[in-house]
Length: 117
Image 1 (tube, rainbow, N blue to C red):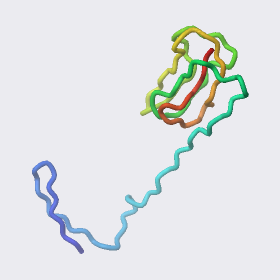
Image 2 (image 1 turned 120 degrees about the vertical axis):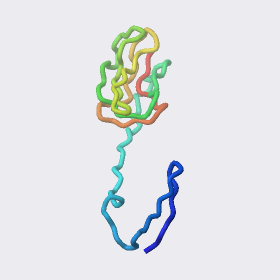
Image 3 (image 1 turned 135 degrees about the horizontal axis):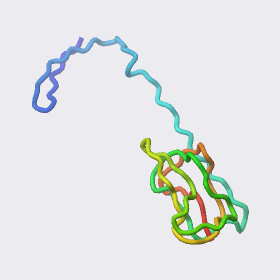
Image 4 (image 1 turned 30 degrees about the horizontal axis):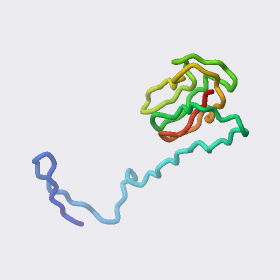
């Protein structure tokens, strides 16, 4: 057994820790996060305007499709981050050139989710 003195917010605690005893709480295996595989768009299908993920999260829904005309502010995808649903919108009027993520994909911040022409 080992004895420790721990100070938390100015309060001093004496703690005794037994060695070799596991409570099971600290042994839970972390879950792996599935990351979106980069999807190769057909040659010439990449648009000039890139719409990037503003934060890491999971794509809940894809609301637009390639070839669809969109206006500034139209919802392209729905991204869940920190238990909140965030609409990813078109930054300007245009035509959707490609959608680079699918529902269920986990994405990192800065990843291109869609492109517009």
